[in-house]
Length: 136
Image (cartoon, rainbow, N blue to C red; front, side):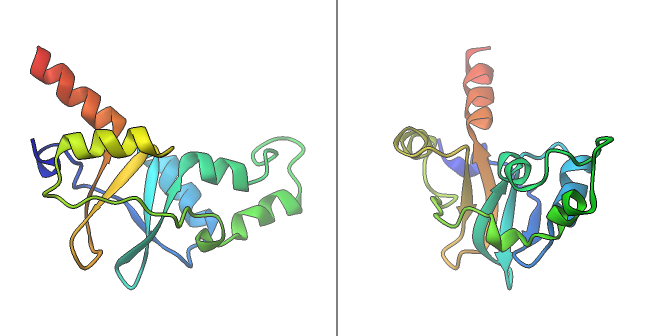
């Protein structure tokens, strides 16, 4: 089975120069857990909700929030994104994705075309949903 049959082609991208304010708005208003980071429409990194939470002050939104806490949202995506990219193409198989997940400590795999433009994304959740549907 090819990845393009189960990948999510609805992805959210953010520019590498975006601030964590912008990322906060995306995570607050969507159900996405990974943002694909681009520079001139080319994939250059991945930012997970966990990366975001590690980078911002834990006091945001609390009664003890200070200006320094709020200023943590001025951080640029490029300073905290994962740049060690593990990608596959739409023509790879789901088994290729399973192998990559098992070899690397990653939670998503960007699916890219030959020119590194984004075609989609796949997560373990997508694979598990497919297995469940095949069993059902």
